[in-house]
Image 1 (cartoon, rainbow, N blue to C red):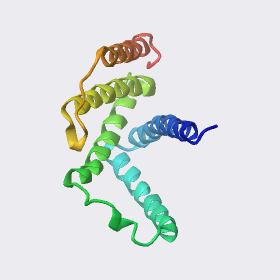
Image 2: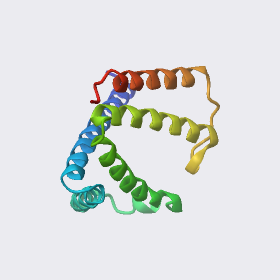
Image 3: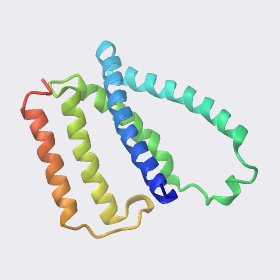
Length: 159
């Protein structure tokens, strides 16, 4: 298998795994929210994530080549806002997953909103992205995702 194909496969597997992990995270944070409240779920998730991240940073720092940080440009100020959106995601998901939407409805609506926002970000070039024109395929994809999400919710799978 050529190196480019292996690289594409690795990225596909990583994206697929991220989706699976996101669904598991939503469920577990929803459980925390059910047994306590959404804010406690957010605090717990981020405290646990901080501990794991610090441990991983410590391990990765051992293997990091010297001078690697000097090769990168400075971090834009808006990159630090990710934590705010992460906390909001946990709170909103913990509320939604404990509603009649359940996990499947929460994920379906979340996926649709992610795609819609991503298309807007691509079109307007939010946060340093290169702006691109949307085409008919983009709108077909959004329509199919919205239709699938509605089927999941209206079929009662989320109840």
